[in-house]
Length: 402
Image (cartoon, rainbow, N blue to C red; front, side):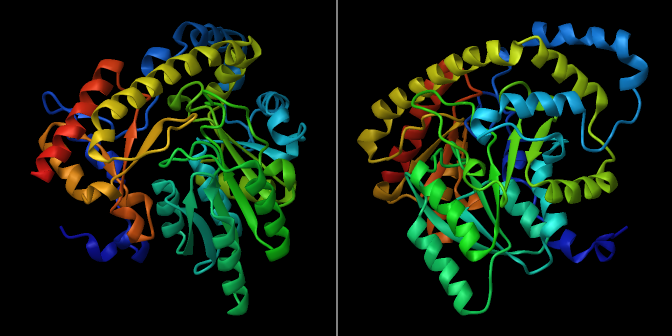
C-alpha cells in the first residue's frame, strides 16, 4: 500500500540523518569509521554507575511511577549547584528542567516560541540535527559564517541590520559555544559578551547549546553567554558526553517563564523524563563520581586528540589539508580548499578505501562551505584505528590527485 498521500507536508520534506544512514554500512569487513560522534565505551563508569541500582530497593515504588514533568527536584538542585561557576551563579529550581536528552530542548523551545516562517539565526556550519528540528518547525534559517574564534560578529551585526531594514527580526539565535559540532571551534569571550548585548539591542533569544563544554583538554573554561544575559539565554546541557548517552538526560536553564512554557509542551510530548534514570544519575552524582570520573574522560580523549593531530601532521599536511586543532570536544574539521578536492568526492573515495567520514554538506546551509570540509571523530576509534584511518584519508586524496 502506498502511504505517501497520508504523510504531512513536513514529513514529505523530512530528511534522515546522514550520520545515522552512513553508520548502516559500518558492518562491512575492514571498515573504519570517523563518521560518528559517540563516546568511547571503554570510559563508561560501569561499576560506579551500577552502585546506584540499590535505589530500586529503597525507592522502587516511587521511581517506577510517573514523575513530574520538570524533573527530579534533587537532580535539578545538584545541576544548579554543580554548574553555578559556568552559569554565573546557582539558579532556582523553577529556572531548570530535565529533558530526555539535550536535543529535546531544541524541539521544546521551538514549540514554545517559534511560529512557521519565524527567523532563526545559526552559525554555518552547525549541528545537523538542529537544522532538522528547525526544518520540522518550518523556520526561515539565516546563517552567519564562522572563523577560528566562532561566529563572525561583524557578519552577525550586518545580518541583524539587514533584517531590521526589511522590517524583520529573528526570534532566536542558535549556537554551540564550545568545541562546536562539527567544526570544533570555541566562541571567544569577547564575542560571547557581544552576542549577549546584541540580543538586547535586536530583541531576540539565544539557545546556548553546550554538550561538549566540560570536555576541555587545554586552556581555561570560558563564561557562558547565559552568565552575561540570563534574561535572554536558554542554556542546554547534557550528561551524554560526560556520563553516558544512554541515560538520555539533558537539562535546560533559562528564565522561569520560558522554562514553564517548555514544561507545558513536554507534558504532551513524553509526559516526563524517566524517574529511574534520573534517580540513578542523581545517586552517581551524589557519590562524587561525576567529578572524580571526569579527569579520566579528559585524559583519554586528549590522548586520542593528540594521536589524530600527529597522524594528520604526518599524513595530510604534506597534501595541503588544513585544520585547527580542537582544544576539546570530539571532532577535527578538515579543510580541503588547497587540495582542490570536493568534500563529497573525497567522502566517496574514502568509502571505497573502507573509511567513513562525514562531508560538510549536512551541516551547512551555505553551500559554498559544504564543498570544502569533512568531519573526523576521534573520541570513539582506538589510537591504532585513528592512525590507520589517517593513512586511508591520505591514500584517498592521492588517488584523486592522480
